[in-house]
Length: 245
Image (cartoon, rainbow, N blue to C red; front, side, top):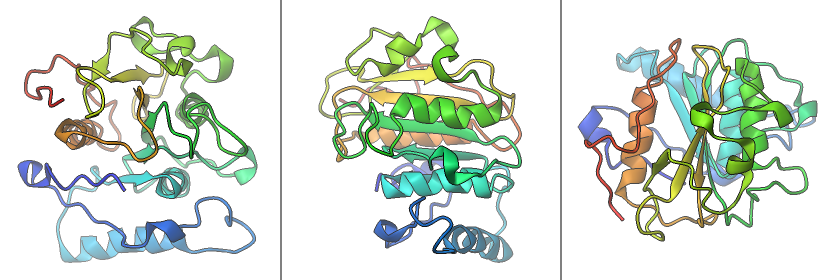
């Protein structure tokens, strides 16, 4: 799991982790097994709130692989609780999942283009990274499908291309590539309180080697996307967060 403990003290935030992420019933068991994973996780948050004060506009969920599918479920089934979901190299439930979020939820989908477990282009039942973003972005009123458009003149062809598309909005979060390696695509037309963003990590796998910028940049994205706001995305030229290749 891509943990975010490194910058937590800097932001005075609390991060909670489950010790058995492999057993989440992401979508394979959403009807027949009557699983209680969503209730379990939201129950933890509610219990935590009874013990410690926290900003209810800043509740976010991050997960990788099966955990990514799980946070997609949280974004749908518990949209009233979560400000954003951050799925890392996973896919949302299929169309027959039959769930519609009760309100917008910010989305940050992160995916390596050389992932051969949950393929960037999609395979079998798993959606590809771009399709995952446009699918969930549709709940937020974003442009979807083949007609999807992105901010800053980025195209769907740029987003789907597994190599460097020379898109200018980029970050440096991978140790395997010198300089900027992650292209940022934010869907256009979204609701003001529900953005949808893809970080395309060029050349990374399902077990990525990430530098310290990864956690710092994700936490800053989280802080800029509280519940009920349009967020405030930062650019790669933000001098507060230098490269760490």
